Length: 461
Image (cartoon, rainbow, N blue to C red; front, top):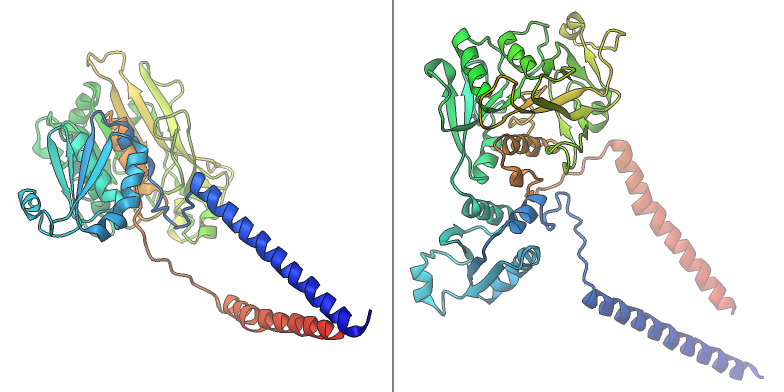
């Protein structure tokens, strides 16, 4: 075979190989598309999983008793824009029905519904309606909660003993948590015990977070009577930095219900690894045998938290369970003189981790004549659901779940929808240098070298 024939043979071989490879690649792509069409799967890569329905939304949809009629007032573009979220609701429950009405084509119908702008959603359930003008999972689900609830339980926030207000927008306030409660169709009322003869009957539960001043005898009696008669309460007690507890009366009430609040500050060296102070311990383990911990996901961060212990045995008629524990590396610092100097180290007398910092109690004391059980949730930190720490982990979820459990609204115990948020990538100087040399110098250089080597070898063929 001469050189000319050999070259033609090689070209033919390359051509056949190219055609074969092209056919194989096209076939693989076609197969992947076919399988994707037949068995569609969605992968949510967003940080807060904003394209995956939250546990709360799934629970709300499963709890529907009658059809929900959703009417979107918008044009063709609106219909296609919101189709994915409506299909997700429909997938969660076949009782969700939706349709689109174009206000430009049906102006009379839009006017009758009170539509003032495009992309407005009207929800109808059991004769009640709600309007959603910003269509997101969080806002649609919140309106569904309001429609499906019978009445609005009142949560009474106790103030007057150093507690921050739920209406306070400052870093130490709880306005973020308040919004979460209102989204779940709860009413919020501030309560000053010294101005009341007894706990108002409208209070479905009391919230007392961060009390650091003493209770008057009349207030102590009021709380004892309330709990004895089947009251519900969520309490958060911060650790002090001087070992001086000013709320001994409240501690005594809690101990009578099986909860011991220790005078120590939980310190967790692991917290420094995630960029927070050691005095903000991580609640890493949740009790799967409790309603609050069973399906809980994620971690919580409890600033200035104290350890809690269960009275053993529990008071007769009461069931007590720990809810959340720290990492094994945490310990309870009892040397308050060292804390005042800004140092902390584990001593043999310090409680060793994992330490409990959340407890739930339910039942009736043996001498209680109440027809219903008492429900009590105690946290070793009163600041964890505050505005300053609300964005950390699942802090607000745990707080809202505690209130939902206290008022026997277990359907609301869930992880709620998260809104999308911008992400900032911060690099050290060393990391920036490594990325520069890798991406700008090394990788292009290697590609160039491989290209030259392949070109030289092909020239020799």
